[in-house]
Image 1 (cartoon, one colour):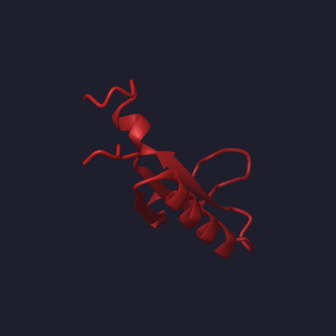
Image 2: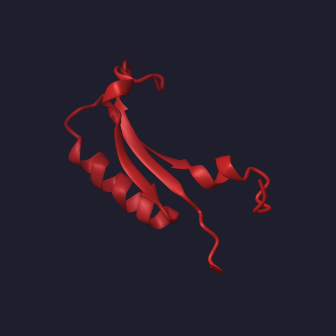
Image 3: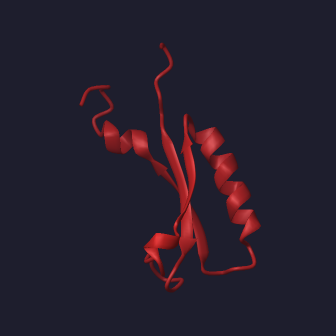
Amino acid sequence: MSDKQLLHLVFGGELENLEEVSFRDLNDLDIVGVFPDYESASKAWRSKAQSTVDNAHMRYFIVHMHKLLDPDGDGKF
């Protein structure tokens, strides 16, 4: 495979307050999925964020998993 995988995780949940990222219930996190690139992750994030716009405490995030798996960016563990 010649294309480098740039995995992104999209997840969200209800925050305890609006001033910090601390979730009310970790068992109730919404794991939207893992996506092969930022563009597809962003589409999923936007869709979930828009669907929960009426709940001010609900937040969705994109985690750049590829940066956690390969912090040096050299493709090696």
